[in-house]
Amino acid sequence: MDDIQNIIEKLNKSKFRSSFHLKDKDFEYINKKGFDTIRQHAYDFIIKRLSPAVIMNDGKQTPMRGHPVFIAQHATATCCRECLYKWHKIPQNIQLNESQVDYIVNIIMFWIKKELNKT
Image 1 (tube, rainbow, N blue to C red):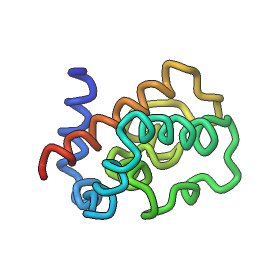
Image 2: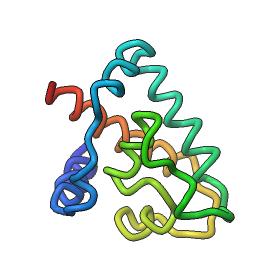
Image 3: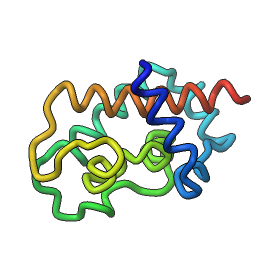
Image 4: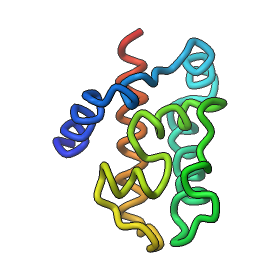
């Protein structure tokens, strides 16, 4: 958990990363679906969009809006393989393993919880 807190603190120093926040409609969606469902969505998105070794549209696979997880991915630099490497030192061009996927989802969910606690 300390590793996640440390990376969140570093990300908060980035003007770009710190500009992302959940909006009312995101909070409503989370409350409607429940936290466990949002976590499952995060796993689904990461496995489908980030896990493959080769991603044809890397850097463009994560929308800037439309789901709380997408917003969290940009805020936590888990939106593409280039950002994963730059911020989290997860190598590019390899299939993500289960531990790496768990790490990414945990960071996303930590950030979402932090946003929820601001309200």
